[in-house]
Length: 435
Image 1: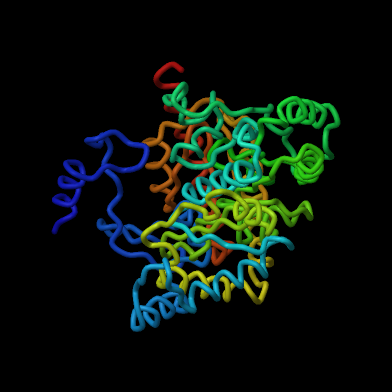
Image 2 (image 1 turned 90 degrees about the horizontal axis):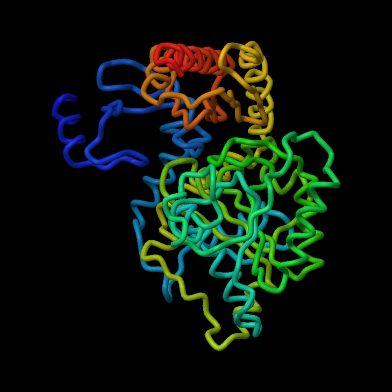
């Protein structure tokens, strides 16, 4: 099938994420991928600055990950998880318990990051209901967050600046504090902590859990905050008998320079959500971990089971490649890679500070963000980056990168140049249309 025919059929039948149907802008047709590169149908080769929405941390076609999938395929591709178990899933759960903060002992495997948040919410609500406190059924969070596109996760995404305003009045009403102050290295602001403490104190009797993205607020705005606020949340949740949930779907497995963002704070949440990089970007898999007290709370109820059972729960192929991905992280070389990427991003992006149309430049670990004064026109910015040899996917006023850890310094420099090109093209577009 020719690229032209593919695009014709794509526009007629394929509904892409965050896009209308039928589509208005043709997507780029990818024929293959290897390492950090995407090869397009027109012969162009682009450095993937997004690592497939932050998941392909080891790059594409990694021999160890390919081998894990092939080996497992020769044994079984899937078997139901109800009443059955298998070595890849057991081994993965063991590894996750060892890697995550001390105290997280139980692992529920699920399909995607958003579903892992749904499971976390269900765990929290059922925990309190089973303990005879059904009134504890609301969630608290801070503004600027994003937790997925299914219903309960949407309810704790930013209610004003987020992408789910359409569902206001349909979603459960949750409690929102102001967003945490910016600055990874900044000390905790006592005034802000007081605001959060007051909100949690006043609503403690109805709150099942606090859920936040630790250290980095991802798709809600790519903002970085001090780990000190995580320690304050742990203290306040303990004080008011509220469960604490960390959504580490975007930050897990080294993205911020620590294996998990919670490690920056040295605290253990009651529930932790993992996804994205769990399989190195190969297959959809997520996990919701909890401390024994949460599971015990559920077990003492009238319905002592967590009534959630995805058809493909614990898929052996996904678990096998997740184990292989974790094995690649085991030697710790990723720490040097992420530190190298961070240094290169700072060097590459710092010249954009103060450039026309740019309001902020920030870097943390293998995350580089350029914030604009106005929303980036997606097609214009993407085309400018592609012309510079890089695949980027801006959103709202942010042009950012989360590259694979295997990206070489020269590739990071090219990504920085492409972000600059996309920022300039966006600013020129707004000037041309009079915005």
